[in-house]
Length: 515
Image (cartoon, rainbow, N blue to C red; front, top):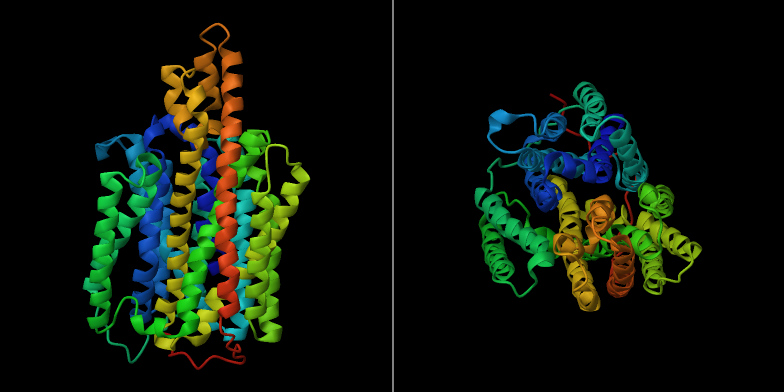
C-alpha cells in the first residue's frame, strides 16, 4: 500500500507541480507557442496507456507492468529536467521536453490505471472503497501542496527541480513494490494480444484528443478539427468491430451489457467534464476577475481540494460500514451540482467568502463521488476482466475531462473575443498574441509590462485593457459555470438511476500462488 500510494502521489504531483514553473520554462526554452504541447503530449499517451496496459495486466499479471511504468516515469522525469541540455538529439529544448513528457505519460498512465486495479485484486468489494478513498485523498493532497512546492522549487532552486523531485519518491515506491508486492500470474486466460483493437483505439483517440485540443485555437468549423473528428469516428467504428471479433478484446463489449458498468461510464464522463470546468477556470476567475494576486495562485483551489480529500476518506468508510455506494453517489452529485450553481451566480462583485462556500460544497461532493464508480464497476465485473473494467472508468473520465476543457475553452474564447472586440484596436501589435488567449495573461504579466512601458502612457493603457479583459472574462467564465451546472444536474439524474448492488465483504477468492 505504501508503494502504491507513493506511486499515485508521484504521478498526481507531477501534474500539479510543473504548472507553477511554466513561466520559467517558457523563458528558459523559448517555447511559448509550443508550451500547450507539454500537457497535450502527456495527456495523449497517458489516456491511451490506461486501457492497453490494464488489459495486458489481466493476461500477464500486474507487478511487472506497474514496475515498468514507475521506472519509466522516474527515468523520463530525469530527462525532462535535462531538457535543453541534450544537444545530441538534434531538437531544441522545448521539443525535447515535449518528447520526454509524451514518454512520461505512458508510465504515468500505467501507474494510475493499475494502482486502482491492484486494490481490486487485494481487497474485498466493501473494503475497496476505503482504500480507494485514501488514493483519491492522496491525489487531492498532491493537488493542494503541488503548486506551492513547485513555486518554491522554481524560485529557490530551478524549474528543473520540479522534475528532479520525482526521483527520490519514485525510487522508494519502486523498491517497495519490487520487494513486497507478489507476482500473481493469471491462469486460464488466452494470452492473445488484440493488436487490431490496440491500433484502432490509438487511431481513434489520438485524432479526438488533438481535435479537442486544437478547437480553442481553430474553432469547431475548421477543416483541421472536422477532419480529425471524422477520422476519430471512423476509427471508433473500426475499434468496435475489432472488439466484437477479438479472442481477448482490449475492452470487452460484453462488460457494457451490465447496466452498472454502462451507466457508470457515462456518469464518470460527465463528472470529468464538470470537474475540469471548475479546476481549470476557477483560478482564472479569481485572478483575472476578482483580483486575487498571482503569487497566491498555488493556494487558490485549497478549499475545494480539502473538501475533496475529506469526502474521499468519508465515502470509503461509508462503503466499508454500510456496504453500499449509491447514497454517496447521489449525495455527491447533488453537492457538485449545487456548487456549480453557486459558481454560476458569481460575478465581478462576488465576495470571496461566497466563492469559498461554493468551493467547499463542490469539493466535498467531488470527494464523495470520485471513488464510487470504480467501486461499483469492480463489484460487478468478472474477475478475469477486472483490469479492463476498472480501466474503463479512468479512460472515460479522462476523455470527459478533455472534452470538457475543449468545450469550455471554446465557450470562453467565443464570448471573450465577442466582448473584447471593441478594445482590440488599442492593443499594440507585438502584444496582440498575448491578448488573443486570456487564459495565459496571468503568466505573461512581466512581458506585457515591458512592452507597454516603452511608450508614453503605456501603463495606463495596459491597466485599461486589463479592465476590459476582466469584464469579458467574467462573462465568458460565467457561461462556463452555467454550462457545467447543467451538465452536473444531468449527472444527478444518472446517479439516481444507478443500480445499487450490495458490496460483498470478507476475503477475496484465493489468488494464484505468487511466482
